[in-house]
Length: 604
Image (cartoon, rainbow, N blue to C red; front, side, top):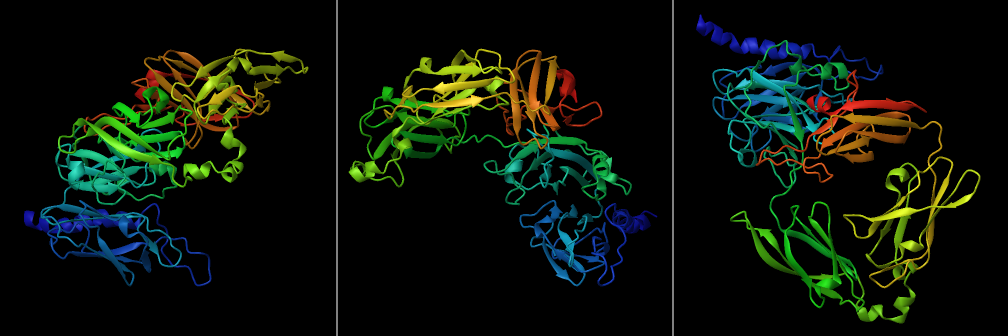
């Protein structure tokens, strides 16, 4: 009796796998349209496979598989014919009549359940209608594994789905496995970032997802993004023919796609490099140079330029401390080539520890004329006005002037300043000219940037002016500034709306961002440490997202994760309405008030 059941196993699995293929949500009538009739919009349908799905004892050497369709097809993207567990080389494929033949350049592993996934790989030959996809299962052993897991891969900062990520399971639980070996099972995510990994062995796994740029199914930290679950997982869901998670849906069918169960959520991020070295250097102007490092938080013990004392150099790190700008504050003629020496801590490739080294780099301006030619009369005559002026920008935007004021930014650091000579005044609706006051704050990250903030409350209908007079500033080149004046008014469009957000239950530091509907642009940002009421004025009709990030180290940026220390990226949450909508829909000419309880949001 057991022998008969064993012989029937391939037929039972064939029915489980093939029957849903003929009743897919994406497939309709497969009858071809008559010549000259309406355009064919029906995708190809799979009619048969050889060997049948669920076949066991498939030979490890020389195995070939044939998939027969109802019409002539083409292989549109060969790399999307995906074998799990993957091999070093991807599957080979070719067309034969109405069939697709798949084989492998390497031997298969013994006693292993395999799946061949076809996602966005095959289309019909005439109209290019995509085959909706299919997972074909076989085993080189005596049985088919029957467990599965599901999940979703999201971008860590936007929480948007990540398409075409490679989700990988490892039986090897060591931290180095994802760097050195191929997974025990793998699958690609769909347009919704969703994955279903079926036909798994009953054991414990590590779960990862990567953006596999070179399709080698191994994580490359320098170039690829990664996501992981910080615990071992044990599959419990059993494969069967009723699971909607294994069906192939039209990706535009929002209701069906969202109805699928997702057991795990992975948030994808780009790791910070850990190997430290000076990776780039350059000089783009006579008194300006830069050096940049591979990893953040570069440790520089000392830095000097031959011929210049330390007090003649102005240096500035960026926020990540992986790029250093250098200016020479010296009026003497600068050599054609600067000799820079950097004493810093570099990663020893053998011990993987930071060790002090001194590196020397000659810096010259690529394409620049030698000094003798630059002193030539004709060359000096050809100089433009901006070549002999302290160049700066004075900017203000109507929507942000209340929060950010006027921004004054210089091309080079200034060595003489006369902020008292700047004039701030405004015209009221009756055109009365009134003198105003403002504060000056230098940017903490950029020595060349200043914020000029009006002390008065800005009002609609008023015209505000900030004037910089001639020779108010002088830069390290010895050049004085020209005069300029900027006018700004608050937006007066009656169709604009205001969103007021009251945050309660605030603890620690939070970054609150208002984003566009596509979540690709931050429209306004606040950093808060206590309960606060935040205003987002001058909004056009449309949909907006509110992102709240737990800024654990209070550095005003969203920090990424680290795989080896099992540290997740900083927690990002998007506010959802009571009906589950992820956007706040702002009509025209309204004031919208929204209360957000932060602890409740984080629990979602």
